[in-house]
Image (cartoon, rainbow, N blue to C red; front, side, top):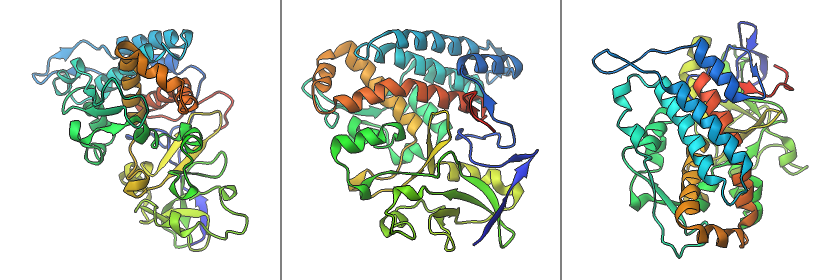
Length: 368
């Protein structure tokens, strides 16, 4: 299949955007180095009226929670890594509350969840490695509510309850920005790597094929493969999400399994977006997310939800079991933990800002 010109709307090429939910694909990229100020501006120019089940207007607190998030973010940046997880979690928690209040259909649907974290530990004080420290989530609370709004399939891939607890090590396999550190820490073989880079500074876009139908197109980075390779290896082909396949006429290009009309792109967006992840950067850094066998990490989980769950666990370790953090930071997982805790709050705030506004937000040095 020969892929031709990009599909456009309002003179903007239609491509996958950062948001998972209802992305505004035809809007121009927002350029800012301060997502807190931009989202605050967005709230003031895109006000929502929140009502309860009786139709009574409820006080609009989403701006308050967003500003609380900003204050905790500033505190996080002033603290060493041994103390930062506590304000870091409250930064993320308040940002999520802002998202829930702004986008929920009614206040009554979320008010009970706002008072519960919805996450808990499932490990003992003697657990000192990331493979031993485990996390599970409850049936109600902020976390499961956030998960249901962000990705309904998440609650089926990772079930609630102590019997389905996952270790921090297992959860870290789903986060692209620590992928290199994870692979190095645990000597993960190439065949079990979850993320495959796309072509530099490129994101999956919608194009017309030679058959005049529209497909999602994503070009993999050839440098990731051996110089002698003419197409991606079979082991990667077997782990492709079901909604994408290899273009038979271009061995390092992925196209959507189903073609679509322009007015159907929004209907396909959500499932296609799950197949790709990005890392916050001043460039567009996108990755294919492979579906791995259970022994290599299993089906992929939404990175935002995983980041949130891990930070919650670290915040409780800092408060109640600091000896666990001391032992981790003195062991071989030290670098991996440092990488995660150093980068996660900026990654998450970039993601949640895009999710709230449903826009693509990039640093000011980036071109459209």
